[in-house]
Image (tube, rainbow, N blue to C red; front, side):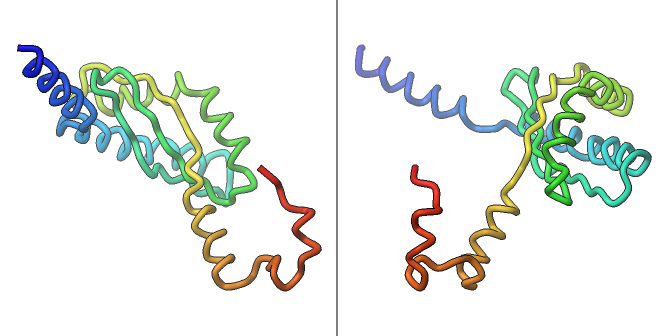
Length: 147
């Protein structure tokens, strides 16, 4: 009896971590409409800024949504994330108006900066040799972060 109980716990914890079709559909709806809302706001107030919603992850109880944003140019990204986070209530209201026939309840939105493109760019620069090479110039080793 104890062995079967342990086996059931492992199975249930495995299935809880998977994303359901409903979560995927809600994330897709939020992502599509959030792109429209943020692009419209960027066109009105900030010229030359591109905001992309790279991923939306909805929790299993559909109450929270993590929204990952990629912002170009990257030098304005921190300020824009703070501005977007401070206007979460207005963004949530606009999304609720757009999705009122698709969603019963709008999840709480939390915005994060998606810096994966910057990370890929740094790897490409390293592979091309655009970054200082410590083998060719050992003096730069003292300047690097030691973690």
